[in-house]
Length: 240
Image 1 (cartoon, rainbow, N blue to C red):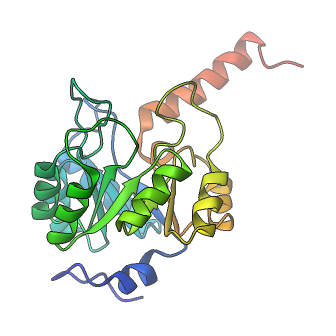
Image 2 (cartoon, rainbow, N blue to C red; image 1 turned 90 degrees about the vertical axis):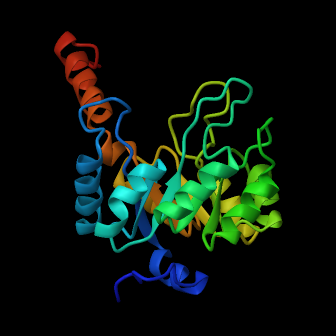
């Protein structure tokens, strides 16, 4: 397959050919952790692509700008903000969209949940398309995703399923993937796809592509999972 075009973001059919059935790696280290610097994240993205990732997901316009010149695959960009008057965190403001587009993001993802927000979803979508980028809706349920698809979003992600209240399920939301695919959406499976088997099941359920993050790029979290398992075994907690 030819390299992703450097001079432009290509076309939506090109993105389909490039990403359909492929893996996206979310290279977002633990905030403030030892891997949280631009040079390290750049190496993460290069390692992910060397391993077969077809695109990467990055947080922050500065980080997108730092990685863009060295990476010849699509970049999904987001900005995370903790605002006092809304639970919406992922690319909540129009200025975030403009900054990500200027930094070189190909796809810009925004929170598409039905919650109070500082900027209407329609305005964010318009800004993304005006900048020549593709729009991804990070949804929490089928209703979120279908509404965003009807508005004109290009990609619907299951990113926020299980993360908007109540206990977080252990399993990924394959039902949401299949329901949105049956509705005709271009579905990005994301959220708790932490093994190759789970990622494969997302594609089998109809996902256009699947994003994996923590299991590949958050070393502290993965180490804690292994350390907890070893500690349980040492205490005899896992004995039958």
